[in-house]
Image (cartoon, rainbow, N blue to C red; front, side):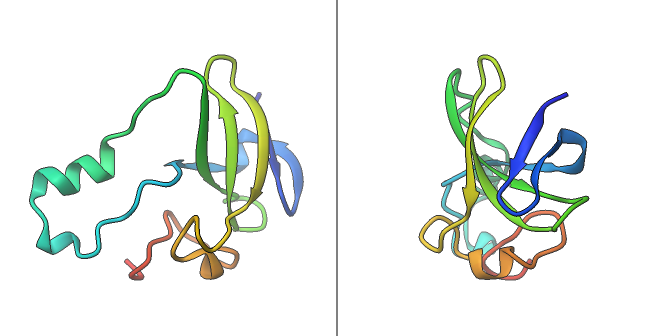
Length: 108
C-alpha cells in the first residue's frame, strides 16, 4: 500500500486519495472556443514520464484538500508533498476547501 503524506493530515493510505494527474498543465481559457482535439489532448494527454513527476492529489476521505506530490514513477517513492501555491494552480484558494473531483478555474 502506498502511503501518501497529506500536508494537513499526515501519512495516509492511498485509498483515501484521488490522483488529479500531472501538475502544471495550463487549462485552456475557454474549452468551447478550442478544437475538440486540443481539448481532448488537455484532458487526457500526459507525458507519462519515467522518473520524477509532479502531480495533484485530492484527499477525498480526509480533509478534502488538493495538494502537490513529487513522486518517482520508477518505484512509486514519494519525494515531497506540499500545499498548492497560487502560481501553481488558478483555483488554489478554493482548493483548500474544495470537495469534489477536479478543481478548475471557471467553476466547472
